[in-house]
Length: 98
Ligand code: FES
Image 1 (cartoon, rainbow, N blue to C red):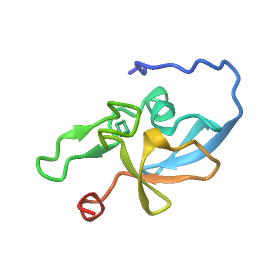
Image 2: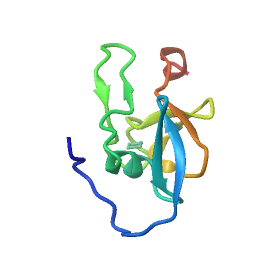
Image 3: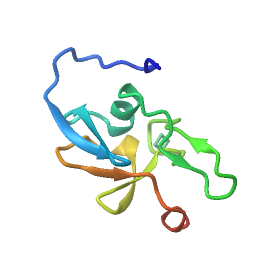
């Protein structure tokens, strides 16, 4: 499926990150949530209660729907810049309860 979002910069410097075990080439310094959406990642986490998939919504740090684990630390993807070698995972239920 073609991503619903696209990058504005036609030739960004790209770096490799790993999301849920898959290598992705993302623009260095870009907003991580936006870069993941443009790369075709539709859902970043599931809710701990119902298991419903969640995706970035507000893109300004208010809704927390973009929570991911980056190098083992739970963070908001929309408040994080892409950098080389990031290990990104969907939050575990224990991390989401923190
Ligand atoms: S998208 Fe709402 S806090 Fe990140």
